Length: 159
Image (cartoon, rainbow, N blue to C red; front, side, top):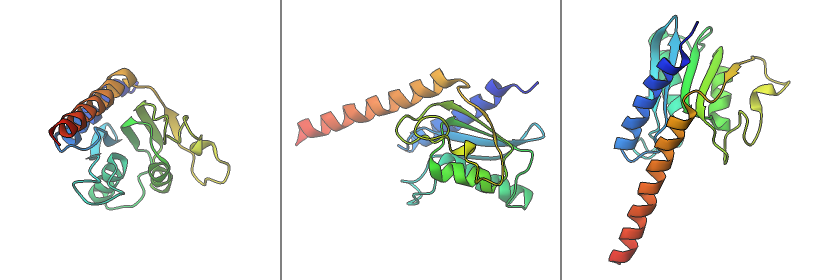
């Protein structure tokens, strides 16, 4: 039996790295044969790259490690429900299973705004497990945005 919580904890630690760089705290890992083969965290601001989402970073890392653009049999753990760009990359990489933490009501396409992985036109099916350590992931995101709002208020007072 796979311990999804163990692996999600690894992704959550990467979310902390994103937060330390003032990025939205989202982390992701790719696991194959019970080994992390790729990891990433949100870095679109620091990388000056709108595609530098945690999932994309982890998939790129895994593909480079195995020397293939396909990752059959792998599992992707991400702390937040993926967006449309990341969902497409998951399918193209042939990831077998997606495990995510918190839902993303504004732009998530697994269950929130759309059910992308249920589309009939897809040539690869991804097994989905949602809500793993969702409360912990959600609290991390909420804390980050509360801090940001507080910072903005303080900056306005200084003007």
